[in-house]
Length: 182
Image (cartoon, rainbow, N blue to C red; front, top):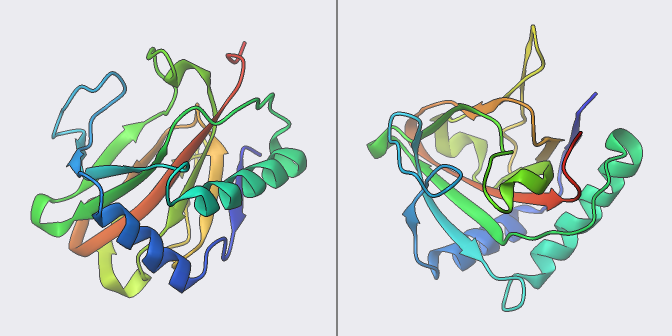
């Protein structure tokens, strides 16, 4: 199995603090690997948290969670975390979504992605739609929408964020890296 879940990787207070930290950063329109913007595929605002500044505690928690999941479920050759933490905002006013995709691409860093971890920062009652769905071949896994829950999956797996139909969904994403899959 190439998925792993945490019921409460972050507390509600932690989630609110991560959202607050992201609001202090510049929010850009979320693009695809290579920076391409295609609204029919992705509509979201993103900001990047700097672990060397105020978000070091967030990255430490993520690293520990990825290490445990990797030991228990994946056994990937993970050697580093080369990208900053991404906070994505999917809002009903933009029909926020991210259509089916994988996180491995031809980009200079994206080609080395091994595992993706996505944490739900918003309370589930604050938005409708916006489900993180991961394709398992003939079935689809829907990740928990509980605030603070996290889902890890192999970066090559197809996944999407369904359109947000009411409210706003905040999520935190981080990728781990290592030698390219063969």
